Length: 183
Length: 279
Ligand code: SF4
Image (cartoon, rainbow over all chains, first blue to last red; front, side, top):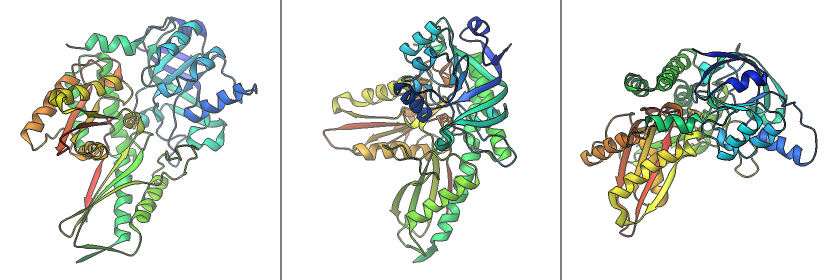
């Protein structure tokens, strides 16, 4: 059974999720990947304001394809989250509540997730066409010049996710493989 | 001497790019179905079901299987009795890629490695040509995403490490990659040659029909053993735990230097896209 959850998040509802829960996410999420994260952190370094609010938001690590005619977005599956590990703790400290991507996070990011009561969700990598069906609207919010890497707001409906790291720091990328490894 | 107009090459590369990004092969779909039948993990099964549904949807709607439509890697075996006329081959391939990625609504992922300035049209393509006997041109297009490419590894082993060292290196590469290359993966393995030749040999193995064993019985045995060991790692679909970590291992070897034992692993995600045509 999947748990329904809405973004931006109610932190209480978020804190009840456990690694291994299946979730259907509706609401709005921000998108951002390598280049957008680099710019956000450069702005922070310079003490300048960010073009978006991160409070209780989710960032989905994705660089979508252009939409087919008549569609709101093209294929839009997750990218490898580990490349955002260098930036993620800083954004969580500023209020970011959740990240959506694929692949394991560094121990320092898991620790930051725990400290901030955040959650890291896994989306299915390489299921970009299927995931696009869950996206009902998309608009660019910042860094339009970055093209596919721009920060967008996506309105999603019943996006299927799995809780990979919960707010207690339980990590499905460690627990899952350990359960199925055969010597 | 056979004359082939460069325009025909362009049209062929264009069509191969368009279909490769949207139409997964029956080989991959068949192996995903087989994986679904033996996967113990409920998450693993759910993910495999999603991938099969995704691949069918992409094909039906003619949209990309995955948003990472990759770098366009083009392999061309040109018969030595062929004369390519009417233009520059590299430019023709880049024109084909530019048009295919624009018309197909594919993502432009190619950029300057240092300034990170996107070229905007997914060019340049990566083009490998070989001169072969005959008067045909064989073209294969394999769009390569970087979630998996980033997890590739080259080992310049010492001869004392032998076959055991080679097997351990391949398994260790898959273990280190974990969830990142979107398992279930296809593992391309090159053994021997020079550093760069070994990696290219590994990449060429990704062009084979996925799951078809090497015609060399010794290599086929190595492929079986590696697949067995990799699928015991427990990584599973999307690295969340399970039995189906790899769909196939494809290995090949080529002579190397008496002082060396290179082994290369080119990781390929389940979006194992490759299309081929012969002119
Ligand atoms: S690794 Fe493959 S399936 Fe995963 S996002 Fe990249 S191209 Fe797509």
